[in-house]
Amino acid sequence: MNLRTDVRTFSVTSPVDGSTYITRPYADGATIEAALKRARAALPSWRRMPLADRLAILLRFGEEMKARAVPLAEMVAWQIGRPLWQADETPRLALVGQLLADVAPEALADAAYPSEEGIRRYARPVAGGLHLSICAWNYPTAMIGYLVTSPLAAGNVVIFKHSPQTPLIAEQAEEAFRAAGGPEGVFQSLHLDHADAERLIASGAFNAVNFIGSVNGGRRVHAAAAGTFTQVHLELGGKDPTYVRSDADLEKAVPLIAEGTYSNAGQSCCSVERIYVDRSIHDRFVDALVAETAKWSIGHPIEEKPMVGPVVRASAADTIRGLTEQAVRAGARRLMPQDARAAALGTAYVQPEVLAGVDHGMQIMRDELFGPVACVQAVDSDEQAVSLMNDSDFGLSASIWTRDVERGVALLDEVEAGTVYLNRCDHADLYLPWGGVKNSGLGRTNGRSGLTEATAAKAYHVRSIIA
Image (cartoon, helix red, strand yellow):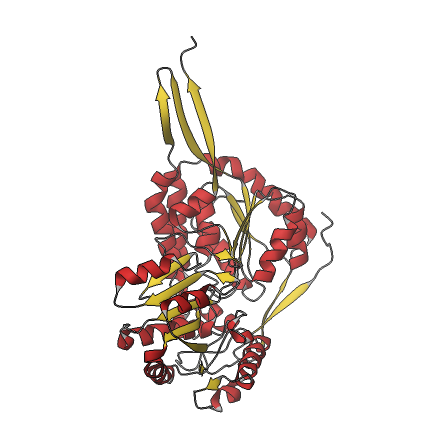
């Protein structure tokens, strides 16, 4: 595979204060080969282990991660800048395991097919084998549920690569799995650079690759797997729209839309990035959103208790500011008073903003922003709103706000997205399949769907009587 043998390191620059938070070595070729060997050796016994025993280990894994909630939250805060009081993701990770334990016995059971005298037909979900799971930095603990817990529950073994922005989370997860009684080789974390990860995928070393990250990263994973027949699951970016109809309850909708736009400093694949509002209520909506946005304080994520901390890195903040300024030059109106506090805190801090008068000729309405900027465009009809919602290269989630449930659901039927909401937004529901269309990815995670996609149906034709 031509993996590198020299010792190389990488460092995490904290967006909180620009300091070097930690430095870690990348895995060299010998370390990678040893991990692959351990994983392949562990697969047969893990796959044969009774489902109840596998699930018990994974439930203990969730509890072990919860026991590490305080250091994990501190790591999240320092590595990506989320306010410390919002940084504990371990309850959601543990809940993924609990919900999988509820549905796995049925989802992984044999499926009966029409049979006849002397012949029995059924299909059995069979684990695919060795998975490489690659995680993004923005929800670095919670997403382990999708990328690790689910494939392990289905009987696969996992090598886990976390973002180079959040490597400590991966180390904690591997330690927690061992503490939960996880067998050697079943779940291992490796600090891989992009080049070695792509070489491994291109070599056909894995039966499946699960990736959460950017569109460009997903393209590279997909390209690396070309010709290997490796199963590829991609959960990529979004440019998620919301539509506020004239009959929407603004008092209830506006705070939720603001939360969907600004939570995690707008750094969520399903953040609300495009807001379409019926022209008859546009001004009232904008006034209410400006008032709500003023409540989203910015501050030091460790020393204070702000609503928003810095974005993940200074270069991301520069991109957000640049697209905002470009939109203003093109005619958008910046509505929030400019506060010198963000600049005083550091170059990675971006003040929550409201832009009105945007349109699809502006790059800020086309490219994924990943920042705390609400972009509002007036529309004249349901048809225009749906057309604009679908006028995007992305299709992860979308939402509509209306008191007319029947009409709202009918409109959602026309929206091109993997998940649609009525009177809700920015929510990855753990009970439903999760994934996107278009540039937002391939495949689905969560519950039954995640377990199904982590297995292959093996067909059984059992003939007990030979005529």
